[in-house]
Image (cartoon, rainbow, N blue to C red; front, top):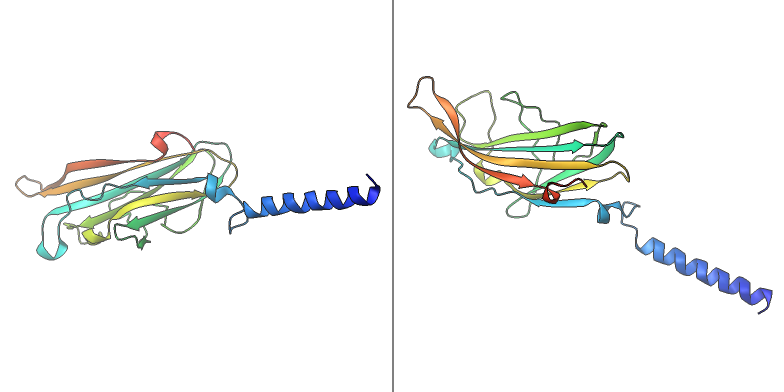
Length: 188
């Protein structure tokens, strides 16, 4: 083979490799969204009271993402209602819970730390705490990891609560629970 044919062959191979690599890259410029996305379901039909009818039940949704690595990691948690629309309500820290995650908004999780999300749906006995309507509860979600480093774990819970008025003092009591499991509880 002469030198001219080898050069053309090399250019064709380089072009083919470039096309293959380019076609595997997502719209964000990396292929991380394909390999580092974790989907999860949320059993959102636990007890929840109709605010307008004063039914004394609420649902609390709690969710944690743990960065178990020694380097910060960038993620976005997306939550969706049962009709498929995006749920973007910020968390409610009205009962003193930590809530750093805002669904649909990127967040950096520091090394060896945890970020959390808490929100309440249905009846509220506390006028200082905002409760969303039961129909707003998220039914599924995904975690998109934007970093090519870091190791994460995540889990959560949807908890049905009943307001007990037959005791003094009145109180909220857990009525039923449903665990949210991400990646079978394994790191990703």
